[in-house]
Length: 264
Image (cartoon, rainbow, N blue to C red; front, side, top):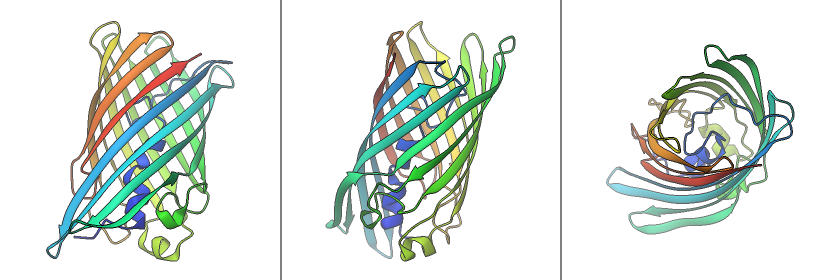
């Protein structure tokens, strides 16, 4: 078993905050805001991870607050920008080894819905993006270098439920030699999610996914499952809450996610 409590682990413990999907999901949808319309998402995440190796226990707890702004450049193209404020604590056999906080890396993305069939409810979007190293990599709050990603998004809308599929690729670069040597640079990820219309205002969501392990020598790829609810207060405000659990050891054990989405 590899020790996950490291600068690399700190950098990825709260990585879900930059997924920029419809909270609390990590799987994105193909929908766009429409020309001239905007959206602000405020998300809070609290995560916990624990493991033991050679009779030594390691524990990490972390939290983040993220703000994401989306602007509809055209009816089918959105510009997206987001940044988290993160803090985490590492303990080894109950002894605090690290206690850090600060801003994370700035993420910039473009979502292009290039196919939309209103008769079938099926649509496709492409979402490329980059991260700018605004976080302190020495504290595990960023990578220290510009990195890039792209995600293919498929959405199928039905009367009672909506389904989403994501296939993504990221290429990460790291400034610190020790983190770069221990990290897998090319990351693939796949996930599926569903939204069930419980009432006119309440939706239940489920999300499951897997991705390449970012620790180069690891044999198992992290997988997660997530469940939650989205409550539409009105046409301009949604409130959400969700719980994410790791399906295997490399994934963060548990995370609580909550937030609100404002549209104008």
